[in-house]
Length: 395
Image 1 (cartoon, one colour):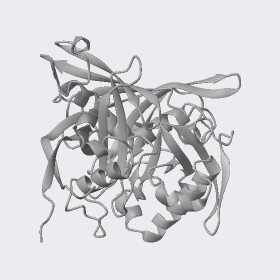
Image 2 (cartoon, rainbow, N blue to C red):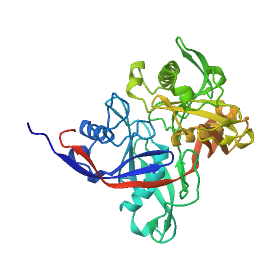
Image 3 (cartoon, rainbow, N blue to C red):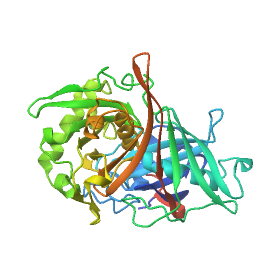
Image 4 (cartoon, rainbow, N blue to C red):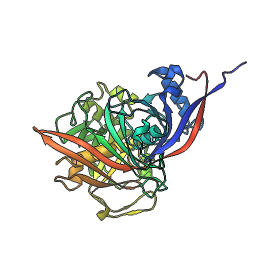
């Protein structure tokens, strides 16, 4: 019996923020995977090692968490005044699908440096020393993101002393601007799809809760921690070890997605795990982070815990941080109230791994809230580069 050989595909394994994933140049993919469809999805599933009924992704590049089961495809931008097109695929761990419905804000931090190092940014835009401004077109959500990437001696500067809670070692700071991050009406309506800053969300057999439903950065359902039986200081094991809790959150997420107009039927939520996110907020409380770091009340404006791909995230998704910053800037949302209310342009929130600061510029124009941009700092680093191998007949 003969078996198909393995093929080699140029790839780079990168950390961006508190996530990591496999990065590809579009032109390096096998021809049949250069366009969206089944072949591309099957290829990425095999690269990452999914679907894996054991939940470990041993036979692939995935790390068995939502933060490490990620893929990125980059190409020279098809959009005017942009450098690179960025397409993100969230690969399911135990199911055979890739979710293309949203962005990864953490891996955004690595897009600029990959683009510079791989010839996707024009040479005359890269300084010998200083900051290179990379104009990114986020192809999943059709938004512009600006990455400010440090350059030393004409090369991306990856090492530095910027510390990011949830990442073990310091690195160079990359500032990211998410321009006009709120939904523009293409899917699920406006920034507040129901027209309300706070809704009543009814979830059969679970309960009725206050919720802020927002499309900014990524569609997100914000709940009050105390209303759903939590303090807001929980760490991963407190939630992820409780199968009943995870099932409740998934049901809340499905009903929230329906109310936001992201799905037309509850059954569609199962194949749309990346969006929307579910998060719960609380007023500041002291707690010990997953690394043992003590977070005091004076360190933070509020507490936020968020779930991604059905599990509590170990830190905070970058796109969810955009949603947090945006909602905090708009008076009377649940996020804003948890942070003390009033007008604000930035918040520092506590998450399971520590704290994060995010800024947002929100304005009320003709009775409608709009957000001009959200800003945060992350870091990125190449972990490995070369080729990934997959069986030739796997896609």
